[in-house]
Image (cartoon, rainbow, N blue to C red; front, side, top):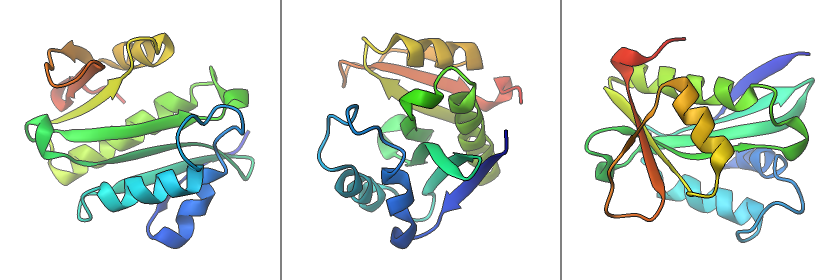
Amino acid sequence: MNIVITEIKDTQDLTILARVYDDNSFDKENPSDYIVKKWAESDEINRYFIVLSMDNKPVGFAASSYVDICGGSYFLSELYTHSSFRRLGLASILVKEVIKNAIYLGYKSTTTETKKVNIPAQELYQKLGFKIIPNPETDNLTFRMNHTEFKI
């Protein structure tokens, strides 16, 4: 199994990310439009979109950037693994890459959110060392990891 992580550097490459989504699992607008919107909303300087490919097939991606609402924390805004490739540790690889990038950029923590019904994501974040933090601004669960606790 050959795993490669590639950084997406411009809008031309965003179509690769849309190919990761399952046809039946995308509950938002058109995947390509959604990803382009996320790109446009992200902080241009600290934007980090990555795609994980397995044997030359894109099967997962993560999107992150600085978001002021997180109290100076780097924010993992999207994490997705194609349903046929879940429970293989690929999401963990993506999250760790985002955290390494946040550390490189000088952030002291990484924050993310997930829906309360998304138990697999909650288990993943807690296994990686994220802690649930109070966030009255959302109905989702908010997780934060201080980078001093990050273990590769």
